[in-house]
Length: 138
Image: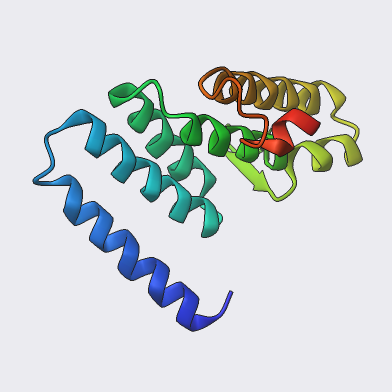
C-alpha cells in the first residue's frame, strides 16, 4: 500500500469516527460503522474490522454488506492460538494458512463461519444473484 493510500485511509477513518459522534439514527450509524470496518479490513486490522461490522449489525441486522465483509475476513484470515500467554497470532490467508500448517480443524471452523455469514448476506438480498457472486460461487 502506498503512503498516499495509507494517508487517505487514515483521513477517511478519522472522518468516519467523527461522524459517529453526532449520528444517533441507528440505520445511518450502521453504515458509518460498516465503512469503518471496510477501512480496517483494507488496513489488515481484521479484529477491528469484525468489531465494527458486529456493531453495525447490532444497529441494522439487515446490512448484507457487513455480513459479506465478515465472511471475506473469515475466509481469508485465520487466528491461530499462539504459544505466548494465550495471545492470538494473525496470519494472512487465514483458512489457507491453517490448511498449509495442517490445522484442518481450525481451517474448517473459519470456512464454516464464512459460509454462515455469506448465507446471511445472500438471504438479505434474495432474487439478485449478482450480489455477492463470490459467495454464490464458493
